[in-house]
Structures are given as structure tokens and as C-alpha cells.
Amino acid sequence: MRAMVLPERGSDLQLQQRPDPQPGEGEIRVAVSACGVCRTDLHVVDGELPDIKYPIIPGHEIVGRVDLVGSDVTTHRIGDRVGIPWLGHTCGVCRFCKEGMENLCERPLFTGYTRDGGFASHTIADARYAFPLGEDGDDISIAPLLCAGLIGWRSLVIAGSAERLGIYGFGAAGHIICQIAVWQGRSVYAFTRQGDLAAQEFARQLGAVWAGGSDTRPEQALDAAIIYAPAGELVPAALRAVRKGGRVVCAGIHMSDIPSFPYAILWEERQLVSVANLTRQDGLDFLKIAPQAGVKTQTTAFPLEQADDVLTRLRTGQILGAAVLRP
Image (tube, rainbow, N blue to C red; front, top):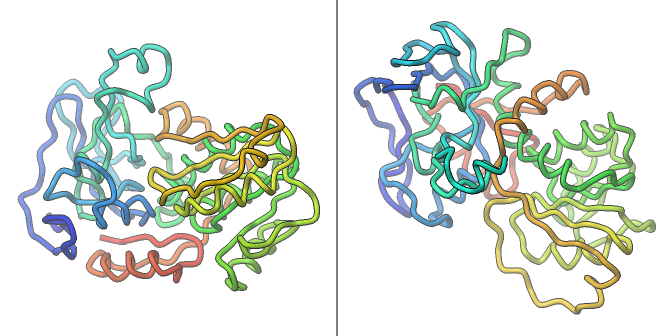
């Protein structure tokens, strides 16, 4: 198989030829047709996450078809189209798994981080963590749903019933969740990098009632805000933008340090919470909701060999919507 491999921290990805992987008990092998490029991939490549397994193949927004089935797999057949998300395995026996919070599992495996991912022509997945996708929709458009969409959905649920919803960082997750929120009848306020007029116009096209730089504030206070950008300085800004009793949701796996802020902007029962990973139920729920809401992802496809260049573009804010690799 062909794969873009991160050999060590700080290294460029390397295109390698490897033997085709073989699925073990309870696993499937998937021929990858599309893999979205997520900001979490940047955190892996930049060494910002702990305990990265080197060498590692990044990528966790995977769409492909099962081409080999391991023993004891009854849920998937050769030829099935599946989606492989960030959460790749949980222990099933720790307190969190038993209490329905498998996203907080004590011994998880994560696709493209602690097990090889989808920047490759083939990948291995735990069959229990591969979502059946059916045949509707094209692979490129579906790929960003497998993380940007799923984590976006979980963060939207945690944001509650907010009528006026702020979205800080209008990238892959932001543009998907904007569409869901508008479909639900909410008013969306999109906050982008200062001066990013293209992203602001994009947000308005998707139904946002207001769009501006993250250093500005709409006239009306927000009921809740979701922060997708990994910028800690946005936390005080979002707290200032929400009303009494409002909620700020930090949706990234990694964020720069949050600066000191006065207690007054947290007081009056404002809440600051985080989202960690996803559950399989999140995936099942969201993959039903997305077509009902008419979600259309804005994607730009690139060949697998350009993965490093795509990551650079993502790092510098040059991707509108989501980038997807095609092996």
C-alpha cells in the first residue's frame, strides 16, 4: 500500500510503500477513497498532542470500501462503504464506557494518532467503530462529516437550545454546523480571523445572520458560543459575547493557553465547558441528521502526495471549508 507517514516529531510526511495490512480478529481492511484533513492532524504532525505513536499515518475522516474482513466480523461485508472516525477503539470495561461515556474511555485508540489512519491507500479499523454509509452521496463530500461534522454535532448538542449561536472559527466544522443550526431555526453569528472577508461572506451564504472578525461583537448577546479555532484568547472574547446563563463550548482537542480573565465575565452563571472526542451514538445520530438538514460540504480535493502542502495551507488559513485527500 501507499501511505504518507510521519516518522518522528517535527518531520515532514514521507510517501512510503508498505506491505498491505492484514485485519485481525474483529477488524476490517478498508480501501481508502477519501480522507479529510482535519486540524487535529495538524496537532499530530506538529507534535502538540501527548504520546503520539511514531511512525504514524495521520488521517481520521476516512471514507472507503471494505476489501478484507477479519475473523468474528459479522457487521460488514466486502464492498460495503464505511466511514472511519477519530475514535477507533474503546476498552468497554472502564467506568466511563460502562456509564455511556465511551468518549472518555481510559484505554482508547484514536485513528491517525495512536493507530494508523487514512492518509494511505488502505487502513485497518475495528469493525465496531466503522459506520455504514450506504450509497448516497460522494466520498469526497462525506469525508469531512467523519470528524468536523461529528465533533461539530456533539458540540452543538452540548451548546443546548441556544437561539443565538456564535461560531468562532469558520472552517470545516463551522461551515457544517452552521447549516445544521440554520436548519434547526437558530440564528448563527460567525466569527472569523480578522479581515477574512471570504470566510465571512461564505458564512452569510450558508445562512449566518451576522459575520465578523473575532475581535468584534454583535449588538445582541449570544445564548451560546462554540469555539472551533485552537486559540485560547477566544475564550474570554466568547464569554464576553454570551448573555447571563450563557454557555461557551471549547470543541478542539488542543488549544493554546487561555489568558487570565476577570471573574466578572464568567459570573452570572455563565458556563465554560469542553468537548472530548465522540461516541458511536453521536455518529449514528449525526449521520441521520446531516442529509435531513441538507448539509453540503465545501471541499477541495488533493492527491495523497500533497498532504504536507495541504497541512501548511490549513495551518495558514488558506482552506475554505474542508480539504480532502484522494489516495
